[in-house]
Image 1 (spheres, rainbow, N blue to C red):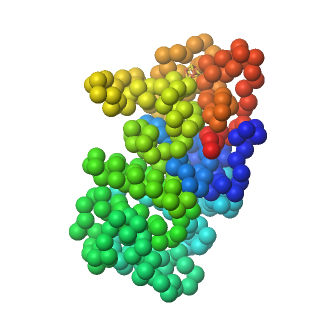
Image 2 (tube, rainbow, N blue to C red):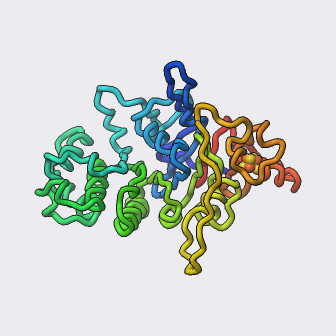
Image 3 (cartoon, helix red, strand yellow):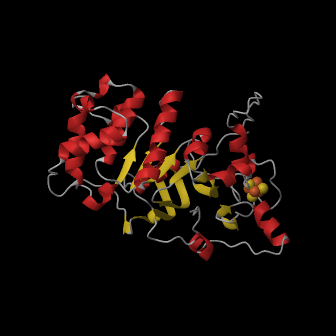
Length: 345
Ligand code: SF4
């Protein structure tokens, strides 16, 4: 890996390297949901992971918590390899790696009070019963903006946004280092979306938690993420700081995604739809996977696959146009060692 992007391993809480997740299918070609994906989540940072439905971003979140086994590559949480979940309870250390799902309603037990569910989560995260159990539950609830009275109530007594807050509180009692938030706002109304997104950004800033914020909503990601990784068909196509990406997206797919997001410019500018459908990951296009939809594609694109290269200060891009631009400028673009990518601090 190039030195420019080598991050201090003390800062990196979750590290994925060249992760492949392949689903076997009977009498049909296997599906590579992840085709060599690398990414670092740092403490205290919101890392946005974006891309269209089916690009593999949720698979990465599930693989990172052991809900899905990986075919090859590695995923480490605080330096220890994440193993697929089995029937045995998760090792306690990994309980500091928490996940929040899209459907808060389905994530909570409708028959148990909120207080009991938070107490269960606390018990599972500790070696010995916590003497200050009740206080910790109240602190977690307060942190997410819910009153003490919530402990006595059931999930059905709350709105969708409040239920997602309960899920966040439940993850907080485990004193997490990383929270993987998989489309945490998709099922919420606009005001609850903004509240939950801001809450997660506050947790990163105030408590130093690394948040992997998986979403297809670019407008929200732009508001809350410090860095963004853009995925297409199981691979990283670009990674950059949020400001860099919006100021100057380099990959044609990033450009198209940003153009397709509604703009709040007061001029009523309509978003530009991204042409074509995402291809079947079981039969990905040859060369650059994006070439059938790319308006800049040229002869080389369907033939050779571009590597993810360092293309500037803490940013990477996998596109022949960027590679050729660097070569024309006399620079030698660097491929991260071992094919790693998506590493932006
Ligand atoms: Fe488009 Fe070619 Fe770049 Fe792929 S490599 S994004 S097809 S220009």
